[in-house]
Image (cartoon, rainbow, N blue to C red):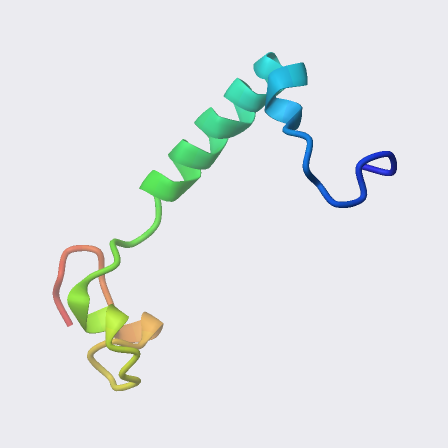
Length: 60
């Protein structure tokens, strides 16, 4: 990154194996997160949406 301070070069082309591994790891992590539902997108902060009240099975 020191030689490409603007970040214009895509290192995925130079390191495809590392990119594939990181992409798989990110996909696995992303799949383990709770889904983003329309209730969450409203940015309403109430007991129904707060993280400690929001369950993956959709129950409160």
